[in-house]
Image 1 (spheres, rainbow over the protein chains, first blue to last red):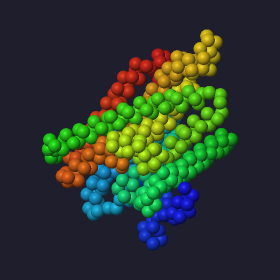
Image 2: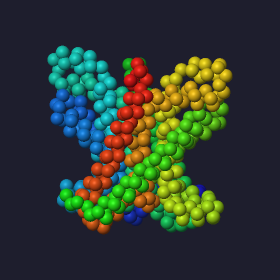
Image 3: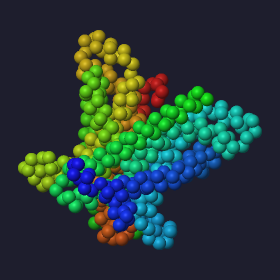
Image 4: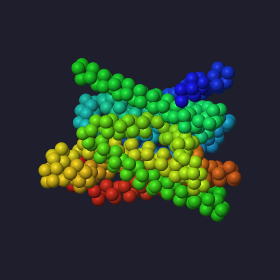
Length: 229
Length: 228
């Protein structure tokens, strides 16, 4: 196992870079960060629409979330492969396809998380804020969302770790990320699939485990410092 | 929207049947492994607890696709030649996919049951022991049934995820719904109709699971309890 790591670590870490396109773990992390960065504002909008008093808006977004949560991410990736080029008008790379599919998928899940956070805030908070004369939007922005988002922070960080894991599906549409690179290594080594995929599992484990542990620690720190303030 | 020809429709229905088979087999495997893990985790023996925790953390932090690839490409190497040959002649990708899916889901299900377990007061177990039940009997007749009732909503969500996750096994050539949809799309270029039909089938399956789940939840809800 160690020989494989020693010989092929650049490929697992950055793919063909600098002689070719960036890949490997670096690309996995880039896709995950982009996916989260775009899905976060989108999910906030969806969550606001879902709890909004406008009936049709909450109905439409509820159905959207329900449908996205009912189909596999892989199916969504194939849809993106087909739909995104039509929307943009030119063919797109697997990378863009994967990011688009992840954004839509994660947005639906994150929206549910945020909605749960908003609904957990006692309605007395809204009533107090409204009776002080602030508008609905101002109440959301200044009173509800700051509390709700902080309360659901742990679930949101969990979503980030699952995004990292979900980028592995890029393998199916030949995006050059970590799993795809490992498969290339496997094709080069040829005789040791157990070791190669073992290394792959260990790399994912180290990244995701350490990330989720440090995010949990960070969350605890934030909570503690707020409790003292 | 084109209507798919009969031949393709059969192909897609065949994919749906495979998806359902894979889902059922891997769920049963996952549930039994999860129950075993929970019972081991609840003992006082620290080595066993540590091992269960390691199992759960490993499966929660490695992508499902990697488990599937690992089981399909890696694990058969460890088997003796004769077993391997037999496996490859008997739909190896299907059984290895079911094992990978099941073991992965087991980690999550075990966590769900364990949170259900936390809702049960210790005195329940002590009372069972005081009445002469041994550890396993106390677990089997007193603790687990109550923990499962608490865990029902989480377990339903997990079943839905497992159903959707069967699609990942297309990567090793299991002829399930997503795989067949891709094949048909390659043959006909009717992307919209093909993916539309496959999506509709997944949604039907997902809504069925949600519906049955809601019935189970209503049946097992603890009256007066938090989730009732």
